[in-house]
Length: 212
Image 1 (cartoon, rainbow, N blue to C red):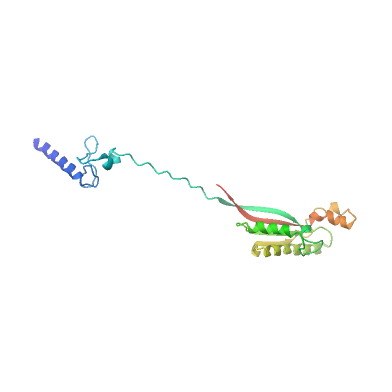
Image 2: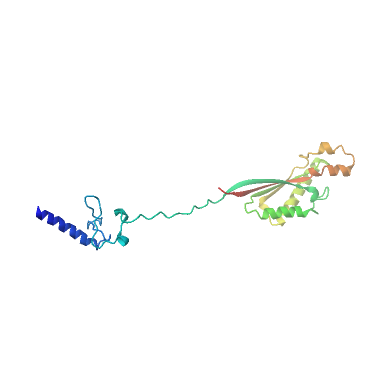
C-alpha cells in the first residue's frame, strides 16, 4: 500500500515539475497530448510556477474568455431599379408652323440634353412626333417623322449616344383637338387652337438607386 501511495505521489510530482516546461505554462499536463491534468474533482493541476495573470487558462476557469469583437453592420448596397419617365415637348417652341428645321426654343432641348447626359443609367430615349389634322394625312405623317428625327439629331449633337435614341412619327393619328378646333373659321386662330396637337412625346428608359 505504502509503495503504491509513494508511486502515485512520484507520478504527480513529475507531472507538476514537467508542467513548467510544457506548452501550457503553470499547469501539469499528461505529457502525451499536452492536455491539462485534472484531479478527481475536475480541477486543473497547477505547478509551483503558476501565475494566474500570465498562465491562466479559460478552460480551467482561471481566465475570462475573450469578448467577441463587435462588427459594425455593413449597409447594403442600393438596388438599381428600372424606371420609365415620359414627358411632352411642344413643337411650337421648336419649329415654325409646317417646318422641320429647329429655329427656336433650343433652351427646352438643351435642358433635355443636360438631364440625359447626367443620367448614368440611361438605357433608351424614344421620340414620337405628332401633328394636328390640318393638311393631307400622308403629308402629316412625313412631317411628324422629319421633325422627330430633327429632335434626335439635336440630342445626338448634344452628346447623347445615337444608338440609344429612336425617332418615329404618328402623324395626325393621335390628334386630340380636331373636333374642337375644326369649328374655328379663321385659320390663324385655328392653328393656335391646335397647337397642343403639334407635339413630341418622349419616353426615357433609365433606372434609379433604391436603398434597401
